[in-house]
Image 1 (cartoon, rainbow, N blue to C red):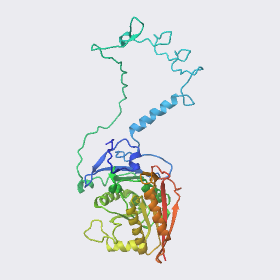
Image 2: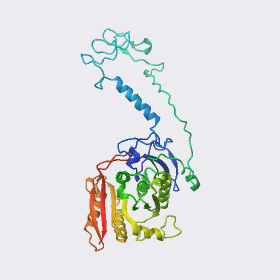
Image 3: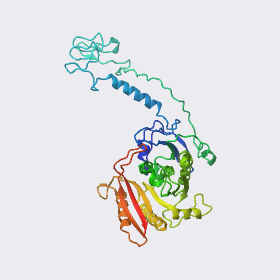
Image 4: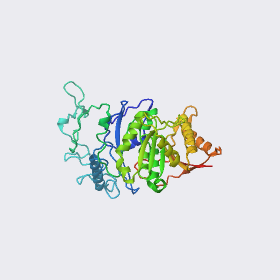
Length: 424
């Protein structure tokens, strides 16, 4: 699985593409036959310790891959053998002094049989015969083909590697999915099941940098969210909801699609070790932005109960959404849903929206543009200018100056926006 095959409609998150890993191992196939991976992300509680977690590594994110450590050690040893200026020792004439027996002219002394003219005297069996005119005849084999001496391959040192045996994966059954849920995991490691290289309609099954940016905000400012009732829109894999549950009281983790919600529920179960000490709870629920009401069907697996709907409207003070604006129609549906929910809330509410400004070259403009981002900004302006006599919206951009608590590339195109809704 080291080679990823892309199709015309394939989308791959930079988190999975750039995160350094020594292995890419599938855990299982989901219900629709897509390969599922498990990534381990270490929380850097002090905001300064930078460590990577191996994708699918049995170490549970506690240590780097042994091969990486050995290569790093060899690199340090090579660096210590060079001069103080980091270069190669040179003689007074600028030549490279590679051996104590090197000539005064800076040439390389390769053999004791070196001629006086600086040429290299190679063995006769190399086939370098000279003709009557003094030229060198190329070595030929018995068929008259050119015989090229080959350098012997360097034998690599043997490494202590675990034996890997092929496994035929099949679609997981529910009882098989629950086998590893009780596996112990370090207190500072988040385990997330996800897919890779999905079509655009399944991008929610991957982990994106916008989720990490929101998680950084939560981990660096826990007092802002402590004890709150929180709603996440377009939760995807549920990473941000899991982090939020380490400080919040109740988190409604919402999205659409039975397979995506099942994956999200699995991730909540995998990370109970993070939420239980704080007493936080994550409830995975269906919330379709294209519908005007919540699904309260008792037979629906991820439906809402009447008590949950009442709790959402009476106690919610925080709404979050991580990198969900990549399609104009979905962005319009998001802001309509946000407006409708805020009008039904009893208390003032603060919404945090993370977005990555993605640059694309378009034939329509014949230039680099950010159409999805521009439409998102347009919707923000419309919400701030809205005057309906029911709710007053205030929009402001949040500078991401808070510490980075997860290992990812916080690029300048990552933005965080804050929308405050106050009932009139």
